Length: 250
Image (cartoon, rainbow, N blue to C red; front, side, top):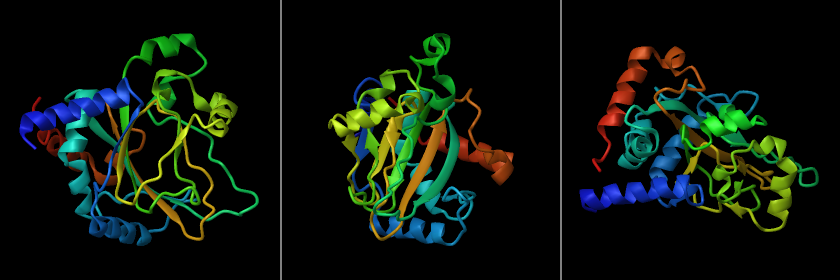
């Protein structure tokens, strides 16, 4: 694809996640070999009590293939400005749950949207029109209804409301068929706005579900996790510089 066509493609993605449905999906973003490499990486380390494996950024060169990919960098630059920065990276396990008593994760929005919306109209008014962060989401397991494929509410990034305060509404809309499910193959990339309502439903399959989360934030936003502490200030500064250098000019 020519560079000007790529630039238009990335601009269309940003419009989709800010003014449209709130989510953009690209199939086959990772190859089966890359998916297998990330699964092996996650399995090499112990998850925390929430099922999350952190501290992986310096454990494999595979991360550069995502973080420095023109889709990641160019969409981040257009949505968040030229000084965008990496916020967090992790891989999370969702273990099989009891078939009868399936837990549901409370619908939520991602940081920094989670810190900028709430019951105060003043807060909503100050931050509602801005995109302060993006989630780059890659399942490392095929997502199906059985294993609790991500449920989401199209256009919810424009509600400027905390779904944890309106969880019942989310599931009522879900039951009424107004939500959608992210039923995709492993290696698919989904990009969404930080104010986008979504939830992981119970895993009723017989195997673990593995999800990769990458958060990219505005340059003036404090990253949600201490990347500098984990990896060192110089390493993260150099990584952010490499990401910014891979932006496709508009």
